[in-house]
Amino acid sequence: MYVVLMAMLALNVSSDVLKGFEIVDEKLTLSTENSARVNDELYKRFEQQYSANPTKVKVWYVKAQEVRGMTDSLYTLLEDLKVEIVKKTDGKDADVRNIKRKEDLEAATQVMLAPAIGRGQELHDAIESYRGRIVGMLADEVQRELVKSNLNTDVPIEAKIMGKNWQEYMFESMPTAAAVTLLTKLQNDIRYAEGQVLNDLVTNIDVKDIRVNRLNAYVIPSSRTVVQGGKFSAQIIMAAVDTTRHPVIYIGDTKIDDANGMYEMICTRTGDYTLKGHIEMLDGEGKVVKRDFQQEYTVVAPSATLSADIMNVLYAGYDNPISVSVPGVSTNQVSLSMTGGTLKQTAPGKYIAVPTNVGGTAEFTVSARQEGRTQVMGKFSYRVRKLPDPTAYIPAGDAHFKGGKISKKNLIDASGIGAAIDDGLLNIPFRVKGFETVFFDNLGNAVPEVSSSAEFTDRQKNMMRGLSRGKRFFITNIKAQGPDGIERTLNGALEVIVN
Image (cartoon, rainbow, N blue to C red):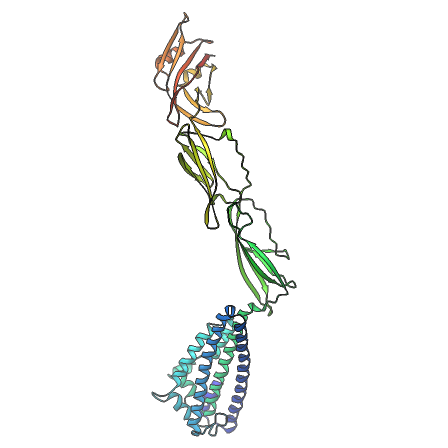
């Protein structure tokens, strides 16, 4: 239509053509009035829903009023321009619906393009501002592009070459009937854009018109396991469901086929996890409504506590391994403290306790963090004892010779003796600080020899080399120091028989 209108600038426009513009204007006016009535019904719907539930509807109601205000403002500007052009054409008693001098080519030019007072630039800026704000409220890309096209203020290339701006291209030497029709079309376009935004806003209120036919009450606990002294928390809600239509549920990218929305899985590893996914549902228009969800949960290992009162012992100066757990609580939420020694955490739920007071007690306190607070879960007391005496041995390859027959080669190859607690429960090396050997001469006299370290002395080695098969000697007065720093002399003697 714009091309036809521009072509009229060079033509002697006939009355039939001008009459055609009048008919088009009437049709556009009727269409605009129909759009306005539909939009008014939407505004009434906003009023009703806002009155019924202001908390839910307020944000959308405010946006609707914003749309109404800026649309009415631009619509009024367009109407004022039509009246001003027609009055410039027919005088102060002019009627926009009954233009006398439809062919007038000066009125539109003067009103819109007159130096300093022309209102074309005002209209151009108002349309661009409105278009930017209204398009920003539309979610559907097709509607966005349609509104952009209807309210486009770009100038065709041929007009740019001639140095014309938008208002000159639209209104310069334009017959009054055509100018009024252009302004009416713009009024129709903004009412259409208004309606599109209002429908989007109403859709947001109705959550895309998902209907329900059953109300159920649900209790959603924050945890199904509560420790004594802890807090039970639950959200109690009324949920609306549609028994005739089931949502599609995805855990990650995997679809859940259960019609009742039940999801189950075997938990094979302990720790804290988050269940994530989304639900899809068709609305009344057949469009997909998607909502994301996530739920945190904790997997704990099966556990039982067994206490033997006689055996609750720790060893002083030794790295005693301690494990702690609380049923129903993840190990990374459990902590342990100690008095009467030092405590070092090596992993979640794993500690090394080193008590210091032999003959005293070591006190432990187990705490767990739940529901944003730390709660004491129990206190434990352990008696502190000195490490038991180790057993002396002679290294014989990969084995420990602890008395009896030994080959002469293994005896000669051994550099000295060692001591350790190695009873299947503890595996604790000691440092030998000295010992005494007792050999026997041909007359049966005892020949003692002392080493001030863990090594055999040269004389002890020479005596070993002189032993024949079946001969024996004893290692005694063994002094050893353990990781607790306590030095002790071992009872008994290590009997060595050369094989």
